[in-house]
Amino acid sequence: MTATLSLFVALFAELFPNGISHYAIGGLFVGLGVAVIYLGTGTAAGASTFLESTLSYGSSLSRFQQYRPSRDWRIVFTVGIVIGAAIYAVTVSPQDGLWTTDVQWWRLFVGGVLIGIGTRVGKGCTSGHGVCGVGSVSSASFVGVATFLFIAIGTAQLIQAVGVSP
Amino acid sequence: MSPEHDQHPLFLPLVFVGGLLFGFGLGFSHMAQPEVVLSFLQFTDFGLLFVMFGAAIVTGITFFGVKQFRSRAPLTGAVYERRLKSLDKNVVIGGGIFGIGWGLSGICPGAAYASLGIGNVPILYGIAGMFVGAYIQGFWRSARTERNTPATTAD
Image 1: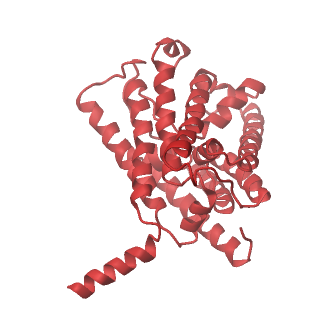
Image 2: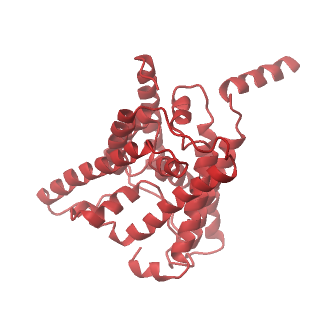
Image 3: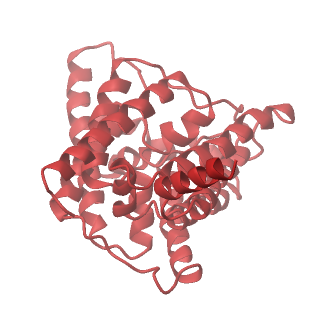
C-alpha cells in the first residue's frame, strides 16, 4: 500500500514537476471568463475569430465582412484579455510577472502565420475548440483538438530532436 | 448576433469583464509563456491538460446548466446554444496546420494576447504572423468563393 502510494507520488512528480494548482486554477478562470460572456449574451467566445473580424476594418475581402457585426465586441474581449493578464502580472506574481520569451522570433512569426491560417480554416483554436467546443461536447471540436494536439506534439518533438532551442 | 444587440448598456462591459477573467486565467496558468506550452508538447510537464480541461468543465457545466433556468440570454435575447461546428475535412486540415504552428511556436491566439499583457514584447512577431495567416486564408477563400458561386456558407 505504501509502496503503491509512493510510486504514485513519484509518477505525479514526474508528470507535473511544477505541481498542478496554478494550472487548474488558471483553467477555472479561463472557463469562468467564457461562462460570464455566455450567460449574458449567449455567445461562446473564442479568441481566434478576432483575427478575421479585425481584418474587416481594413480589408474589403468578402471573407472578412461576415464578421462585421461582432468585430467591435471582439476587440473589447481581446483588450480585456491583455489587461486581465497584466493584472495577473502586477498582482499575483510581481517578482516574476514581467518576462519575455526566449523562443526565437522566426519560430513565433512562422508559427503565427500557420496558426492564423489553420485556426480559421479549421473553425477554431485552443479556446474555441479546446474550451468552448469540448465544453459543448461537439464532435467537430473533439476531432479538431485531437488533430492539433497530435500534430503539435509531433512538431515540437521534431523541433527538439533537430536541436532547435529555444 | 446583430449590431443592435451591442446597444444594451451592459453588453460591452460584460464582454470586457469576461476578457479580464480569461486573460487573468491564461496568465495564472502560465499558458501565456511559450516555453511552458512547449514543455507540455515535449512531454516534460503535463499541466496544460488541467488548464484546457479545467476550463472546458466550467464552460460545459455553464452551457448545459443554464438551459435548466433560462432559454434566452438577458443582454441579447439570443437562444442559449452549444458551440457546434460542422465536422468536415476543413476541421482536420486546419487543425493540422494550426498544430504545426502551435508546436513550432508554443503560442496560440488567446495566450498570445495575454502574453502581450504580461509585457512579452517579442510575442508581437507571433501576433503579426497570425494576422498575416488569417489574411492569407481570407484572400484565398474570398477568391475561391467568387469563382464558385453560389457561395458556400460553411463555418
